[in-house]
Image 1: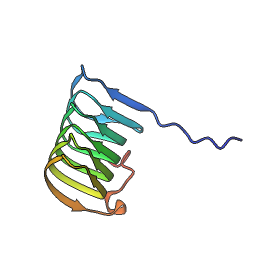
Image 2: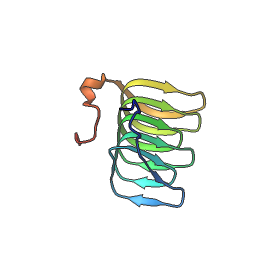
Image 3: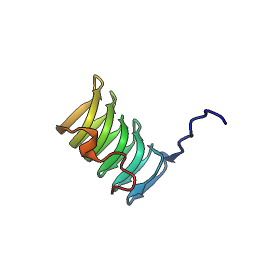
Image 4: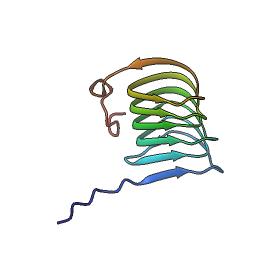
Length: 121
């Protein structure tokens, strides 16, 4: 027997992709391009230069691009390049200097968020 942790796969929406529709993953999702639709994943990362127009549900979320929508997450890290407009329901929040936010904040404990979210859509 080994004590190796299972690896989490990540799906990447690259900079040249524009997706209209919902994304669901049991693993991680990295958004480098544009998504118009809701996103559900274990971990979601919206990189600088990426755009998401829709709701996001994830156990862990990193925002450093543009996001417009409602977010439900356990932990969210908002980076210095982030532009976020909408509503945030979270358990733990970190915001870097330089982030631009127009957000309604609502701190909710993980149990109330029903995380992890895969299967709870």
